[in-house]
Length: 103
Image (tube, rainbow, N blue to C red; front, side):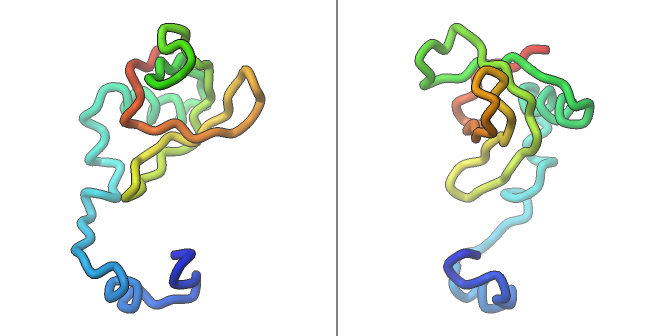
């Protein structure tokens, strides 16, 4: 939407995309079959922190302690938006890199 402007009509946006947009690609329901995502959904609902085992980090064996705040569906890669407890900074964590989630 940044490219077309926040006041753009949806019919104009669809014309600009020039490919089909499927609801399953934007719905959280499609992600719920992933047990890691279900744990994150529960943690968001309960305002709980989790241990996030995350690939491509300096040490994927050492969990990142985060408080997940939201799940963002994005055509360029879905991600979790959450507060990193170590840095006290809000960060994005790509769902495709999540190895495990523990309470």
